[in-house]
Length: 391
Image (tube, rainbow, N blue to C red; front, side):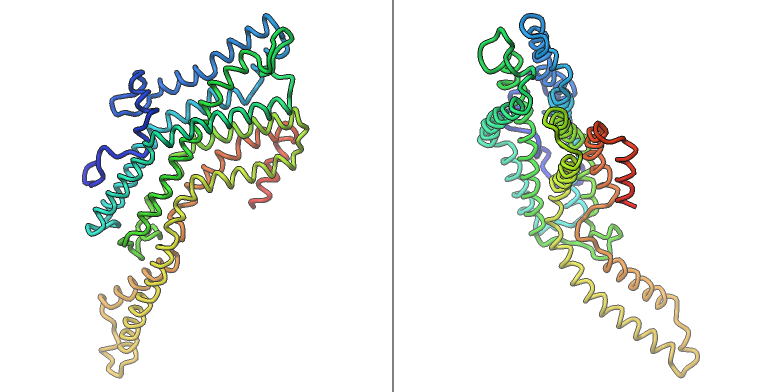
């Protein structure tokens, strides 16, 4: 990154045992990031054997249980869509995250006096996202989460492809065992790893916000110069959509097999959208305190400046000397510029984000839920309720 002091080796997404394994298997490009091919291969490992084993189960043991796999929207959402996006998003996010971090120094918001502290924070964040110990904990948690999820699914719908057929002993079908031991832990591990990264990112931003930032109160982005951070949520729209599809598929399962009502779905949808906004927008809230402090200081400083300039201008206007009553161009320009700057200061946002960045993110979370709600309520009714609530 030209002009930036951010190390080229820094990455919030590269490193760790998982990336080293990918490298050994030839699943990374020259830049150390997984490719689209990697996403396709891993998704195929998660979903392909399930499809084969479910078909085998249908042909030899229990036709009804085996074929239910092919109508299981959750399997498609988790193992084909979500796993693929969870992997390929790394390539897009890595480049953009590094570019955002470099903007702190390139814009002068992090000054030369804070350069060493800034680099130390990057090194710590890099080590955390590459931690083998953290990945081990996430892997164990993924297996525990997979077991709990599978038990819950069997409880609400025992006649499903996960369960053993009439000629199979044990609690699970062959496809069920593959899901328990491979597919579901793999999906949950990738999800947990992204949540861990967002946690590290939040701590990193919090540490950066604690530095003596050189914010500009009259910056036109109305965020003191931090407006570039509005790109952060937008880069994860595909990720939010894929996770929303998984949540929606689970909600659909609750509706079809557990008689869940539209009201329950509505509450779940609202809670999910809030959760998505907290995860993808919440990290930027660490800059609220610096922005509030910036606004308070600027209101006082610029208020005094406006008062001084306006007082001088009024003194000229009300002067007894007629020639002195004509304000010169520099005075008029200075008064107008300072007044415009004060207007900008009063409109400083407490979050460095624009509405155009939030709306697509919220839509990516709600659209899969609308599709599920259409199972119970006509889509026209759902849309009219949404637009009625908005407008």
